Length: 87
Image: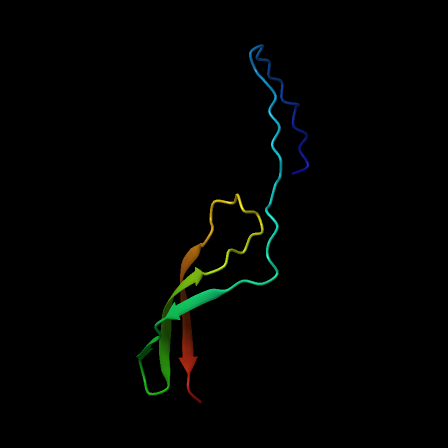
């Protein structure tokens, strides 16, 4: 980490310099979405078990203001998991 690295020396007479713009589309302050999930409970003992909940989320209204942005109505899949202990 404290080691000094030599500068990178590279020469290519045919190389060109390209610029990359860091563009992030503006996000909406609100969005409309539908969330569908199914909870499954696996009980190992009387007081201990596992919860698994696969989810599907669909955005009815895009989260981006930019009309040219490719994902108009994005969706996502997920899974929630957890352990439970009844006291």
